[in-house]
Image 1: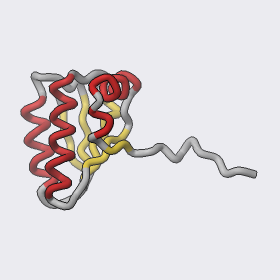
Image 2: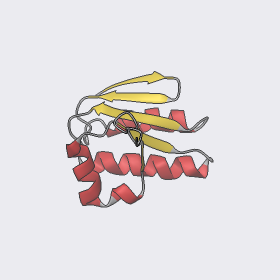
Image 3: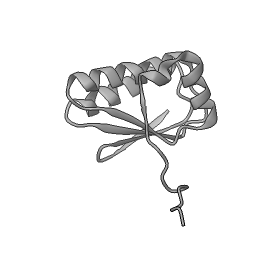
Amino acid sequence: MDISRDGTTLHLCGDFDVRSTWVVRQALHDAIRTDSIVVDLSRVPSVDHTALKVLAFASRRARGHGHHVTLRGCRPTVLRMLHMSRLIRLVELERCVSTLRPIA
């Protein structure tokens, strides 16, 4: 798992599973202390339940600091896991507005 930070955005790249949860947890913990963050998952092909729990816990912890965690670029496999685990109720997803067109 590769993690880079660009301001308030954490970019994750690679499989997000039990082997990478510790390093992601540390990055999230450091980021949410000071500000709301966006976690870009567009380069994450798959996640497991443990990884999703890390995101849900980070979201809850951020709310405790008065911030929030927003997930960006979730692939269909990641969205499916969020729905199946019912953790979709605990995380915030960024809406994609680039596909919206004005009504004529």
